[in-house]
Length: 419
Image 1 (cartoon, rainbow, N blue to C red):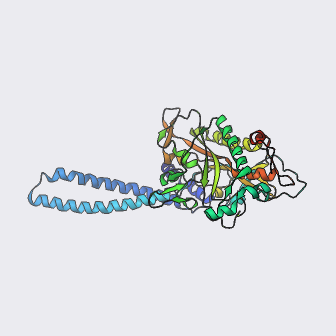
Image 2 (cartoon, rainbow, N blue to C red; image 1 turned 180 degrees about the vertical axis):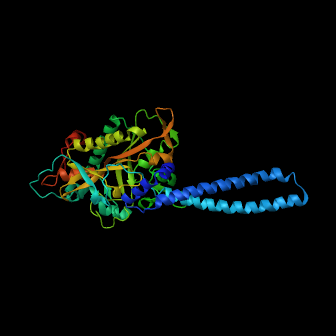
Image 3 (cartoon, rainbow, N blue to C red; image 1 turned 120 degrees about the vertical axis):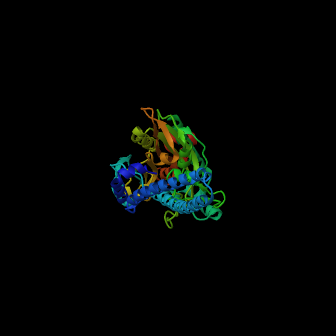
């Protein structure tokens, strides 16, 4: 969440942020008014409570009619206090709700726009492969048809369910293992985190309440847990309520299954495995000092760029516009790989800088150069998902439907082709 004291001093800037993100304006002003009213009412309640607490010391010194008068006055004060406390509780609820409706302030260089159509291409890597045949969609290739059991998955799970088996499953494991080893070599700590977390974790990392409908709930009303759509919230919570040594950034990675309801995606990408409810993902998460989160953002983005470049894929960067940014982000770059059969780029990675939006909620701090406690900055970036696997299949396909294995993976896979 945002710093309320900063918002009070810079209300116009936050109102501008709501406007360029295409969110309801007036919320920042409403939050300031609610905050001030809450503080004023809190002072009144504190004063009434103090008077009530002093009553016992006073009443023991009284007797007779004077004592009864004091008791009656205290009953009236108690009724007023009770009403004020109820009013304060309502104001606190309104304040908390409004606080989560104010987004992080975006980086000055972000393009202003409404949807992903307004994202701006900033760099292109590699070359489009030339084919002597018409490329097929990855889900039309023999290895996918044989080893990706979508119909059986639908019977087991429902829409967008799937099984992966055989050579395709083995190749995915090889690809993910190669990426994980790369990250460990670059100083990332490998963590096996929970993939079910409580609401506190999801709120603390900025996924709730605004995106709550995107996630699966587990046993609501009893356990009240949620399946994560990324290991980011689990990894971030690892250092909640701690003062962390950040003389050099802390880097974490996890390889987990992730779950998303894909709410609102009815009819989109119904073929293949790009838009499914369960998918594997390696995530990168970083904590750093506030003065170098831009450098760490470049570091994470660069690591994925190295991964996908080593695989020989054609891809580009998109600077994500204001209207397509999650609430928690100050900046976001999407990396999209070329899918020749679709004749378009598709997202395979998102790299995000959340500055102190998450760490304020989670109370993650470090000691700065002046010896004072300061809020850490948090960042996250995709390490790999199965979308990169599908991009490899499309870009490396042959006329007979086989798929060439990228050079870095040939020895690991033990074959040159997926057939």
